[in-house]
Image (cartoon, rainbow, N blue to C red; front, side):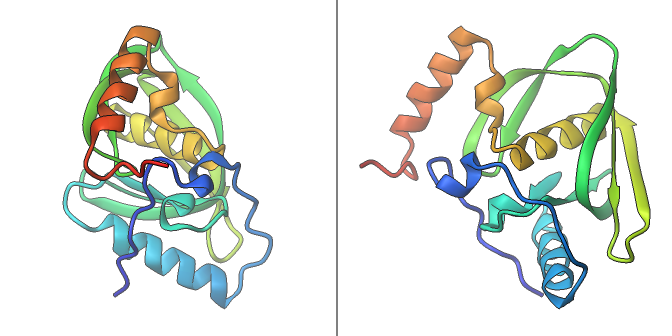
Length: 166
């Protein structure tokens, strides 16, 4: 079992768009194993590969007791009106802020056998799918906060014990 450390706000890998998984090989299998082990830690709904320092398009999820993964996911559909939901992030530990998310989402990608995988859901699953796809585009949830809340969030992050000051 390999629970990988989570990269924190300020790490450049979190700000870079992830590359597609080009080949299903032992390296991709190890990545999936590590993502699955890392997301099984209690309190985690999702872990994107960049959060464990790997710049590839992959994430794992752990929602309502269902644990899984997807490679090369694309957010293909959202439904409803975006509404504020309390959101946090393992890469910005200790904080939660209201972030607008769509109440339903669908992603399409592949598994380790190259078969098409479709994930969809509402509630926490919809939020996790959107959140993890944002990570793969090099975006943290803080960037999508309303401006006043974002200022508050950035002030709090800069004062956090874990924040790396230059």
